Length: 199
Image (tube, rainbow, N blue to C red):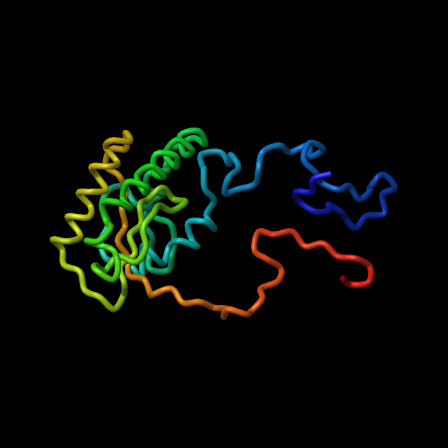
């Protein structure tokens, strides 16, 4: 049996209430919860927008196209490119953005990426924007940002994305939290199994 969610239970005196393991195939709700479920008029829930808001507010350097817009306290003003999208439209956008990210690899290599340049990360986020992380201790001029955007726009046009949303934001250099011999348990995305003796 493949366990997906855990066990659903409720505190009730009703004799018909029972604990039911929620597994693939026996759940009555086949629509996944937000952010990936189909909430009317939404393909992404507010908590996903809020979690990504710092890139669009405090850390933002420059944006192009229909990116989400937030207030200073991360309130949602505009949902950006995903506004009005269906789940299917969003999935097509993600697939096309994935191709754009792959094409950026060769276009950015040795010119814009660290240590030759100031870019330390790039890709796309769940809100449908291409994100370019600029190392916070480096400086980048407007001409260079415009050059990078032109590359992204050209590759996006090839994938059928017109007026692609792009956000350039300041980012710190990633640091390792664990040393070579440290152990992280449970493993992220892993499955933990145990015995009654604690093994």
